[in-house]
Length: 255
Image 1 (cartoon, one colour):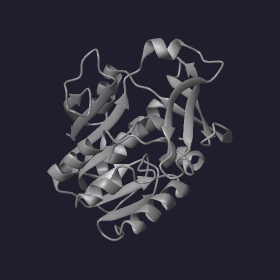
Image 2 (cartoon, rainbow, N blue to C red; image 1 turned 90 degrees about the vertical axis):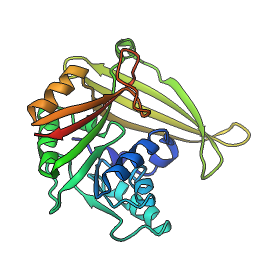
Image 3 (cartoon, rainbow, N blue to C red; image 1 turned 180 degrees about the horizontal axis):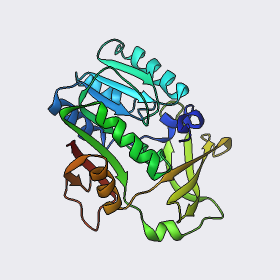
Image 4 (cartoon, rainbow, N blue to C red; image 1 turned 30 degrees about the vertical axis):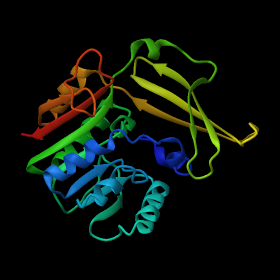
């Protein structure tokens, strides 16, 4: 598994401003009462709001740089201590001397595992950290075949955002290659920064890979790893999964 956060640490919070999933994760954490384990926690985008809601949470990530930023953010917010902990580890083989009633893997972090063997190993390792009635919740994207087969020899513009820290405009583009045999997306995100006059001031590129899963492949993998799927949501409002869904939010119990 590539260390995704090593490349993203300085840019992640500027580019990934998604918040629509946060209420979902906070509600799930509060409903179990804690403690919660988050895998692929990055800079604390999900873990910090969960801790702010009063639920004890431990975040695990394999990037020291991302964890350093998560700890800095937590200290600034006064969240250091037992409520919020961050640990360095790989989701395939981390070891904590604790079991959890809820393990979450938000925002496609599971898809940074680039082989079936790695994904299966991670699921089995998670199971060792779940209580007997604990839940695992994983968020995956639904593969868009039309988008996957479109090669992009040139960067494709996706969105424009305003950096909350600097007030400058950021243009975010993608340049992706698709490996259908391995179900791997070789992704390159390109970020261009502009000042108030529209002059380019900075440019960054981050390359990474994701492995996508189809619905029944994910179901079979969970069952083969010793889980029983109890819910499959199509979005963060808990709508049932259907042909229009862009998210696969799996809720599974160990058996």
